[in-house]
Image 1 (cartoon, rainbow, N blue to C red):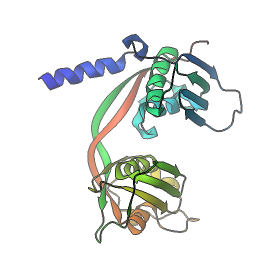
Image 2: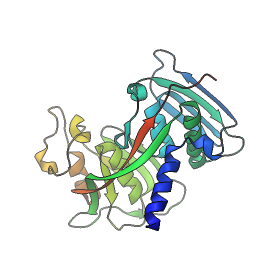
Image 3: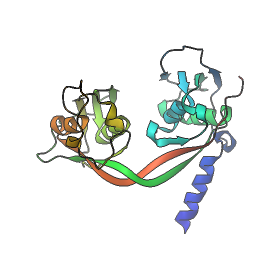
Image 4: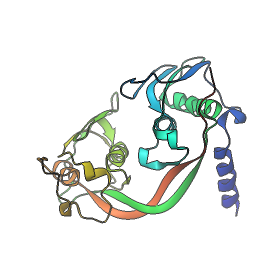
Amino acid sequence: MLRNVVIAIAAVLLLMPAATLGQPTFDIASVKPSPSGGGGMDVTFDTGRLTLRNATLKFCIEFAYRVKDFQVSGGPAWLASETFDIDAKAAGPADSQELRRLLQTLLADRFQLRVRLETKEGPTYALIVARGGSKLHEVPPGDGPEMRTSRNRLNARKISMSGIAQALSGLLGHTVVDLTGLKGVYDVILNWAPDERQTTQKPGVPAEAVAPGENASGPSIFAAVQEQLGLRLEARRGPVETLVVDHAERPTAN
């Protein structure tokens, strides 16, 4: 009973604008519609400063709440089409985690954003060690992690298995849960044949049953994970967290 009450209170708090909860805010912040033809979407941040260029509100939500595209639903039609430029500076030093929290407050204040977290059962992938064992070699933690991804390549240094699972979630458009039991950090290079369908393939369809595109050369991402990493993506069903946008307005003037 107490657990249900706590969950209910948490849900109500999540629905409220962060600014009303006495959360810290950026010292200086500018939010403007992006100029027409503003180019690609970009985010840069250093200690205490955050800049987003040509960013949709949906992308800002993904960045602020550390969720993937497929985990955001609801909201107005312009959520993923209209773009904005955001320049914000904290009152003092702030790392990336703190900048994300400050951005949550900014979105609640300037976009009147209200979101709630829903967890439902849905299709997922489990990342497990393949028969024959992992081909990864543990490296010293050191500085890191670092990661770059593209349509057909993942290059990461000093990354944990949970970090790999997160990267695969974004590439596949489905939640990937790390069940490998591997606790170290690793340098990972993964190459596969780009396939437009990889983000729409439904869990439950074996990887070998999905042929790559006509112009593709090389393994599918599913085969590459097994061949190159000694891991396997297994289709399952499990809890899928979704951030539902209940309310959003175009930003107020600076």
